[in-house]
Length: 235
Image 1 (cartoon, rainbow, N blue to C red):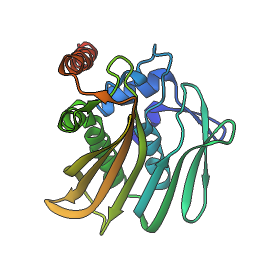
Image 2: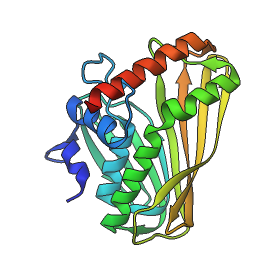
Image 3: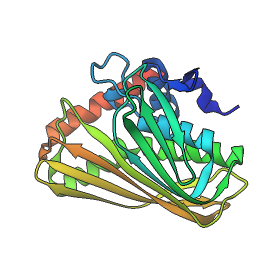
């Protein structure tokens, strides 16, 4: 039994993620305190990392995987998967694609490796804010709307030269912030390692909208609110 089963319920072929399950996954597993994952947020959405994790748990890890996040999932929204030889598509109850995955190469179903990869990746992903994004925004002198921050998954890739029998590590190798008007793209490259050796690499892209000139007091407010939410949850 994979630990991801604690964060959804099944109804026939549908996977249903409650607000509480999505919020608990974000905070407890990923260490992600994005207010979009708070149960009482009117704009609540299920973490993209949860859907990613369920996909890997269900279908295994391929040598090459490209994830395209195409829509947000509200709490209690049924999601089902459509599998073919080279792709997996997650669709909502209106058959609209919310996540598509293209895949190539050998597949591993080693539970130790898969669970280790999930936990390592979502922990890495959860550190995107404030650890990485704040420094990038400061460097580019642009920032998000700190009162209504909107940071959304766009794409992610995993590329393995080989698999391992142990839990892998995810280590940041490079990051950049490309700004076009009020819209920006953060790209993070990372190494995939096992037994102190490189076994592959990956890339994560997120979109930030509503950009405006960087103001340190507003950033301080955002970081303070984020840290307060994290401290409150851990009590």
